[in-house]
Image (cartoon, rainbow, N blue to C red; front, side, top):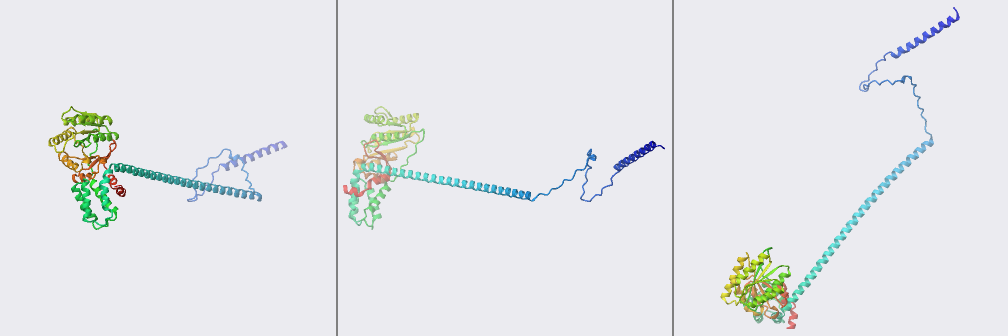
Length: 455
């Protein structure tokens, strides 16, 4: 065999060996793997992972070689950690300080607000107190002015009745029969009235008997209280109703100042912002209508009148009808001056009262009787007679400034039980004043020593 043949045979043999190795390798790869042992309650069933193409051809990853840090690097890390912790602590401390500062600022703001509110409240209270004090001072000053005005009007009465009573008690230390008789004489001669005088003397005996009369203030305080009790009658005046005329019927004998009183009443209501209409129901005297018309121009206000000798009731009726149509607030009806002893004239007055009531439901709302303080005891008799004819609701006592008989007001209130509504203490249009019992008593009895010295 030649050498060439040997090479061919060797090559073939080597090829066979390679093929056999390859076939063996493939047969191993295709052989099934032995089943895995299942571990109870630990291993979970897992789905077979898909084969990744080409993984069999990849070389296994080289293991990562762990490098150990050196001492310098460890110290650096520790320093960095400490620095981070210090920064975190500083940040927390700064946040805490900021929170505390905010809380302190909030508390300070709340304290300032509370202080401001308290200061405002104190200021408001101070203003209110100052306003009240100013109002009280003004009220006292106004009362003093009113007292002085009435006191001037009562000058004659104070110099008569009050001064004489004051002299009686000077130097007295006990109530004697002679002193009581003197008190009675002064009261009667001052036109207080016999019945009222008897009541006052009885009250003096009851209230002051056995007490030391050397203190003049005790006596005067007792008299003041008795006068206040007598004069303190309350007038029952109905309220004004919107859209309805308020009707006032004015009565009185000739010469008492009736027309003047009507004019002053009209002026007072006008000053209060009310519309006024005057009814000239005194048809017996042409001069009476003319006097009322003068007051109508002076106030000013309208005057309804009729022909001379016309029925007074018809004039009053026409005035009220006009007032209702024109929405007038107040109607004041003048009536003829008449003697209270003349029966036919008093009957005419009753008729006027009835007609006024038919013209306006509830009218007249007030019936005012004008009395002249100068007439003294006669004024008490007039009040009794007029009261029998019509229901008198109030008294207007005029000319108190010119008489020493102002004590008649006590007799009228005590005997007739008719309240005083107005008093005239002068000629001025504002000298017709609403009657205030306390103010009147103060004006009459205050400053007794001054009165006694001047008397």
